[in-house]
Length: 225
Image (cartoon, rainbow, N blue to C red; front, side, top):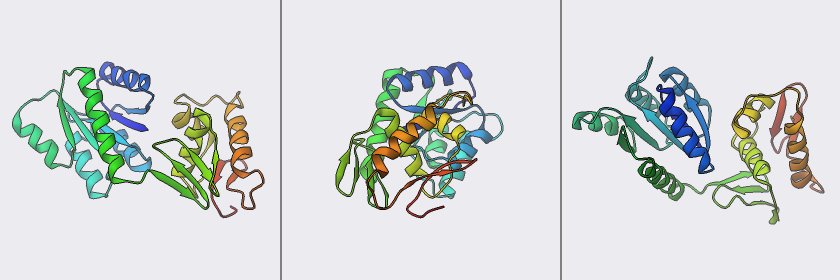
């Protein structure tokens, strides 16, 4: 599960990010409204944690823009305000839930889990490319009906590729979204993981799905690029 946190107070953002990572969520962080809106529009997230008071574009504006563009990702709004009209404005803009800072992290996690369960109930959470399917709930992969055993990193990489099927994803994108760290050009860990994943997905298959785009990155597609 990948979560986007849009919060300009770096201590709070770091606290939330650290706590979510300890619960095994992948977390991206934006510290202003413009960056947050950009990330929310170009990436697929299971949940957005959105502060109202942000530099640039505020949380109400971001929420309205995402809903206008049919982004249905659940949004948990955070704010230091506790006036009823602020809560109403947040929910009316399209937010799914609302918390006032400061808050207990245990309650925050409970809200996160509730929104993720609600979202899971509304979608199949099964990604498909040709005869390859991946369940985001069970983390199980199958090709032509046969189950494929994946390590945690192989699963995260395959999920990221399938969320961007027919698109080229660069090594830098993979490093940031699968490893959650800056890309180190001196390591070949990404290429090694891709090779292991390709061996499991494409070995003995008539139709190869994982393609290397020379000089650019990788793509998962049933069509040869």
